[in-house]
Structure formats: structure tokens, C-alpha cells
Image (cartoon, rainbow, N blue to C red):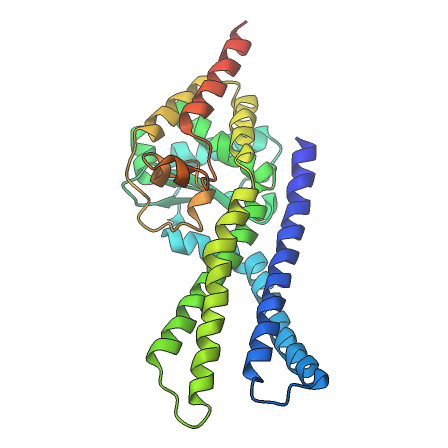
Length: 311
């Protein structure tokens, strides 16, 4: 377990560095493109590339700082999460507190989402700044034992620092996708005037294309590289915490039967959830990019653990 925590901390740094390097490459490419009309001397190219890299470095640094300081709130806002009132959701708040104390963790903030899809996720850069979120439908359809299994799974993600890794990656990928959309709109619908107007449009469209590659090509590959094993580890950690695999098994069976996607979670943030309902009925090729192992496999593993505990 401690090895997994250390590995996730190293991965958070590695993927942040990778993001900065990709951003620098984009800046260099744009710098060279902007200066397309200047004399093609080595000094001029070096100056233009350096200017583009410097601009990209400033932006990349700002994006990383934003991911670490405001990424949690951004994810909660995207999901439409609101703080859970202990008077309205006493069982939820009591279980989170009891499980956190039992696992030696700070009690995370608790949020709920009004959504017709049963699901849950955790986010935060550290156990001290973490949050657990569940949908109101999950609270309605699951009993105390099943809810305990789900919450144990999410708290395990917090303890293993999976939440930091996913928060950094999803925030940076989401920003790239957002900027790509803005650049494409500006390039296609804004008509700048002057002799440099055409060059401006080309630069903006190229920037949008490069950002789109980061957001929609590099992003899925990176999420795939995060490994589905973290979900299986969180399942196992939940069983260790609750000493009851049956609750999580029954909870996963209910999630397996659900086909409703979360209304306000996108593809970047869906990997944080205990289950991605979009993957249930897709083809084999699409499953290659799933960040979650099939629920049937997770249930089978938990059933073996249950047999071991009962012996």
C-alpha cells in the first residue's frame, strides 16, 4: 500500500512535467509559425522559438498552479456538487466520518449531486484537502452496507493519493480541451483585418489543432497509462477497511445494472467515478481506452476475497 502511495506521488510529478514539456513544444511551434515571414536565419528562429517557449512556460506554470489550488473546486463545480447537510444526510456523513477515523485519515468534506445516475467519486490533492461526493440516487437505492462499501472505496482513493494524480491530469487535459475549443472558434468565426489577418487565423487554427491533440489524443492515452489497477486496489482497500466485501459486491452489481450517464460529468472527469456507465455496452475496441476494469471482473475478485475471509 505504501509503495502504491509513493508511486502515485511520483506519477503526479511525472505527468505534470510531461504536460509542461508538451506545452513548451506547442509554444515553440507557434513561435516559429508566427515568425514565418521573418528571414530564416538561425538566430531569428532561435529567438522566435524561445519567445514561444517562454509564453507557453508561463501559461503551463499557471495551469499547474490552478490544478493544484483550484482543481478540486473546479471538478465539484462541473459535477454540480453541493455540501451535504448532516441533518439531511446523517447516514452519509456519519459513515464518512467513521470510516475516515477508522483508517487514520482526516475527515474529508462531503458533497452530494442531484443526478439520476447512482455514482460516487473522490477528489483532492491530499487527504487534508479531499472531498467525497455521491449522487442522491445512490443514497436512495443503496442500503447502509452497500453505501459503506462505496465510501470505503472512495476513501481508499484518497489514502492512496489516486485523487491527486487524477486531479492534476484531468484538470490539465480539461484546460487543453477548453483552450482548443476557444482557439477553433476564434480562428473560424473571427475575421481580423489588416495584412497580417490571414497569418493570425492560421496561427490560431494551428494552436487549436495542437491543443486538441493534447486534450483529445494525448489525454486519453495518459488516462489509460494511469492503469485500471488503481480501481482494483481501491476495491481491495475498501474490503480491508470495512471487513465486509459483500456490501461492495452488492453495490457494484447495482452499478452494473445502471445505464444512465452522469449528466454533468464529462469524459475527462468520469475517470474519477467509482463506475463509468458509458463503458457498459460499448465495443471491444472502445474498451481498450477504459480507465475502469469491467465490473464483472471486479465482482469476481471481490467474491474470491469473500471466500478467503469466510474460511
